[in-house]
Length: 415
Figure 1 (spheres, rainbow, N blue to C red):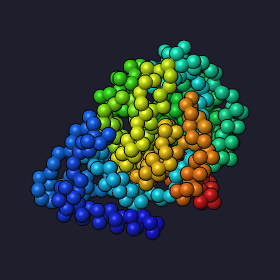
Figure 2 (tube, rainbow, N blue to C red; figure 1 turned 60 degrees about the vertical axis):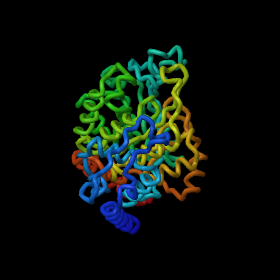
Figure 3 (tube, rainbow, N blue to C red; figure 1 turned 90 degrees about the vertical axis):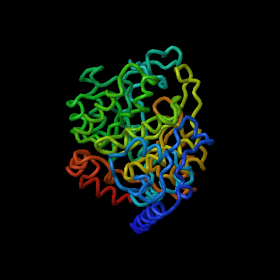
Figure 4 (spheres, rainbow, N blue to C red; figure 1 turned 180 degrees about the vertical axis):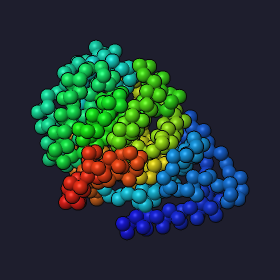
């Protein structure tokens, strides 16, 4: 709490400096000439006088959903060191900067997906090229054992992904098995997240009643670029499912992937969309593309470490209390890259040697990273400060896990 009080004072000091500084001192310019400046539209130069300063600087650290796309562009185009410093101040004012949640992601149903996401190896459209075979939904015991191993290794959230268009594609028996998985893993004292594709309101309600903590449904990129990523569903389909999850009272996990061939303006568009949802997602995964041989995006180069830092920092400024998850693609990031991401506001990682079907960092490496940077693991079921009243009320009721009495006791004992 003392750290957060000092950080809030620093936010006020920054706002004061921005109100009196010159445009050059304030860094109100684009990043032309750097790798992050290509394809980026320079931020407009303000007129002279304090009243012309960008509104976002005077409201730094305020949780708001009325961001304009121009404001988001100005945040994103802030010179990198200034942006990281600003994001770090916002992060410390709203979160414990040393606390990082460790999550594990398991593919409970691999391959045979009817969707055409050009980055994904699990689409049936290019299964011959990728060599990914369609597998059956895993058995309950195998998933439960994987969750036990993850908990013993230090994970506090267990995420399950199924290569489905949605549960409606497979019928009630398989969906019922997933509900049993959720119940079993909740019984271990872990947060539980699923990503199963598009949901109906009844399916979302069933997941909630089973004790699901969060539902992941990434937007991937901007609305404008989305047609280059997939044509088997629309951007509005994604937004509708996020709304369905939110209305059911389940925490929303929604983010995107960097390195899909998008321009910087598309990254701005993605972050603007997330920051202007009716309520900020409780968590926002920032993924770096892991190009898989045989997929249409196999030839795409991964984003640089500093590209990831810029996206993490922008997300933190826009969504001060959201958990920003440094997700897929960490294998290409050095310890220094990841340290900058944590400084800029990332406060979650996925550990374990595989994320769905792609390789991931070894747990031993992550232990070394945590020790080197002085990071500590976030316990399960700490209340999520971001989000909407519906999920907050659900958490307090205990069905969703994040705020139940038993969960709070467990988190206190772990801290």
